[in-house]
Image 1 (cartoon, rainbow, N blue to C red):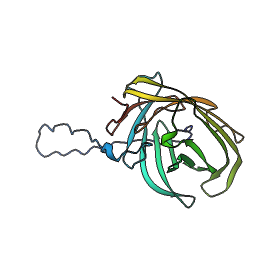
Image 2 (cartoon, rainbow, N blue to C red):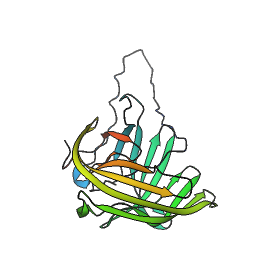
Image 3 (tube, one colour):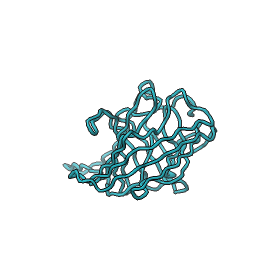
Length: 229
């Protein structure tokens, strides 16, 4: 799972329903929680209903988190893809990815008013069996930025390079993880849509424990597996 910069507004609201006949004490409702059986979570988690929360690195744990949700299969540019959505603090962005034996590829993403398409799809992650320290993959994609009415706002080229630097144990608010440490380098000629050079931490069957934007995982709604405690 990867993130891009957040440009548009989105808010979360809670609705409460009060019922009053005679005065009485109403017990607090239990928090609503979802749980996805670990047997159904993929190496690169993408199932509908999965939820992750993140905070910027170094920020207080009581701060309002970003929330990432797995939305499941949908159609993007005529292709069946898997969607995930990030919200919170004004962020509202949906990614469209292809998952197959070759890994994970990003076909595009949408923010309110803007859709970004990548051809060929951007290779974000390698095949499941390829992981090792020293692994490098790279490529480039034609990038098109269009408004919701279909008008092209910008076109150009995006180049990317990934290198697996290390594998180590880290501790975060969400737990202790055996992470793959990856450095990602990005350049484009349409205004710098992505951080130029960042480090991310990936864990199989969990996702990104640290995103390229410096967001750290604080919680998830599915059980641990493998190198997670």
